[in-house]
Amino acid sequence: MLVVVVLLATVLMRVAIVLAVAYLLLPRGSLCPHCGIEMVALRNRFFDRLLPALQRRWCIECGWDGIVRRPPPPRAVPTRRRTPSPRFAPRPTLR
Ligand SMILES: [Zn+2]
Image (cartoon, rainbow, N blue to C red; front, side, top):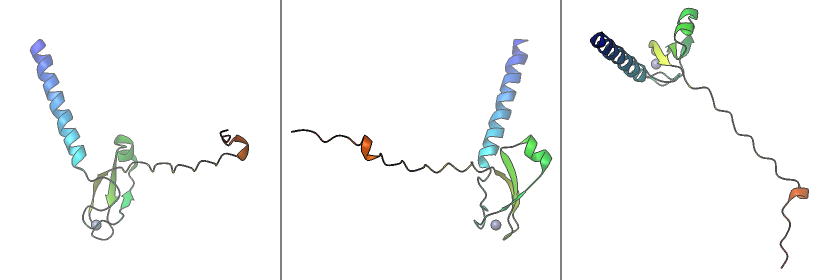
């Protein structure tokens, strides 16, 4: 029984490694890997729900279409800090 568990674990680890490498080999983002322009996202309700980390895209310029890693969401632009009002400004030091 232990042999079966060990063999099953090694098979599962191999599958995980293959899937991880295949995921990392996919192009990332919305730019075409051939010509570098913005590609159009092709929506597929079933595919989007099954693999939300991946996205199918099509390049209008060169016709490349394929699966890419979904680009990360845009980071929030940090807002500038308000300058403290003079009421809370540090006091001048006495000499
Ligand atoms: Zn292209």
